[in-house]
Image (cartoon, rainbow, N blue to C red; front, side):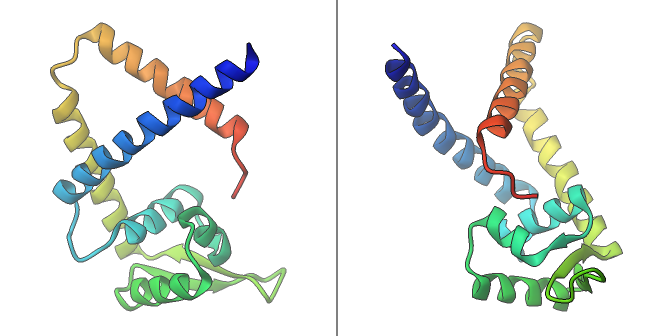
Length: 151
């Protein structure tokens, strides 16, 4: 019995998540400045949510190599969106932090994404919206419970 439920969970994730990713990329293309990549925006949003974050933790979230992370960080520093901050407790750790320009870009991007999402969901009934909100809350809770903690 449990194996069939686990199989159903796996099948559901394999069906739903590609749709969510495709949906998000369409929204991102409509809402974002095309000079920045998905990874650039995720980096900005991680820093927006958590404040100072070690470079290695951001790389784990993005699932990218250290060399790719270095190039991404250098690009965002050059654009004056983030800055490197040494960790005063452990000199081996370098943290990233948003600049005021980075905070503004992250905020504008989040606002534009919310507008795009709202436009797509405006035709749902109140009941459908409540179901969706509940489903997303449950999904987030369960994914947090079963996932690896990065930050």
